[in-house]
Image (cartoon, rainbow, N blue to C red; front, side, top):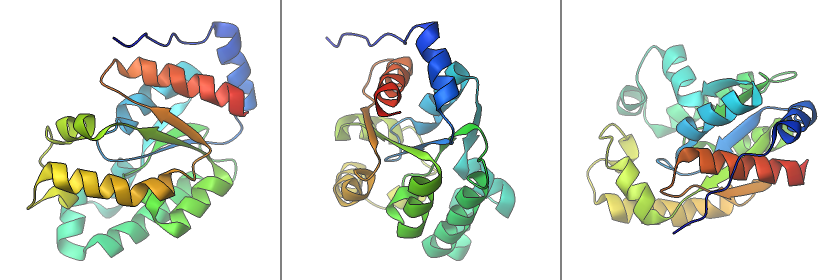
Length: 191
């Protein structure tokens, strides 16, 4: 049994709000909970939440699977980089940004995030990831193969890039608010 990590007290949260001067950018594997945790984190900090994949789909007027099918992954990654750069422009969006699983793996996108945001690697074990991604059949990179094998391989390939994020937090099978509490705790130490 895991002991729950409580949210920091209100004084600590107020202090964090003052000290966070850049967007918080959640990176990590698909299915790790970046969007769900990101919404809860943004709400706790009184910030806006932005899902980069939603912004990409809106800009392209197409779904992510449609972009992959019609134009391929390289085209998608270029659009993803441009959207993330826009979100990080100037003072940024005073927000929490959830990125797609492959965004931080791309050198140019990773550099933008490291320079202009606060990168938080949200991590999880393979079993949890497989269980979560199996709920959604619209993930282009999981088509036509064994989900466990693909997730295991991708996680191993991507971890060196994710490890460049200055903050690393586990997201397990417990309530997502526990991951939020861990992020806040790590941000407080890091800032």
